[in-house]
Length: 171
Image (cartoon, rainbow, N blue to C red; front, side):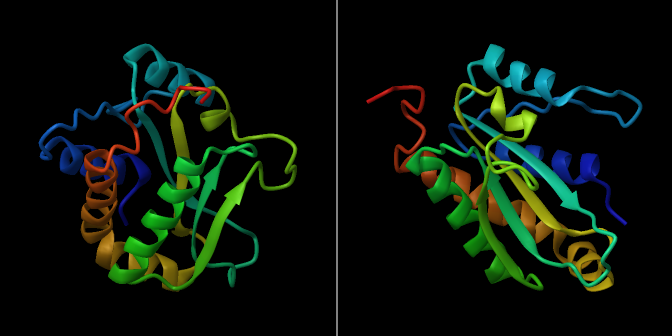
């Protein structure tokens, strides 16, 4: 089973193969705990154009399944476009279900997940299936490298199309 860090590292490496993209990663070992707010601040200090958080969902209900993307409750259009394009690319690779792009926080739509709340740039959380669902795990283990390429392709395409040129603007 591939853990979040190993998967994030594969996405990080795939992004850094792309011309004009310089990805950073917030941690490189599992024995380091970095709070979500600090992860956002790392991206802010780096002057990043995009903050991408990669996670796996979990539920007490083992039938809960699928991929979803989370954006801020008052997301910019670019965040919504990013979420849509990532979900479409992952569907092409093969996922159990598409849970859509969600805004806010799971149980409180008035707040955001901290990992994207404190970013100064386009940001999203990609939930790559449920670790509590056998079929999501099977698909993840089978396709995780293809998922990494699909996500990197979307980011590269959106960079080339100028989506992240000035996402901090209030215009």
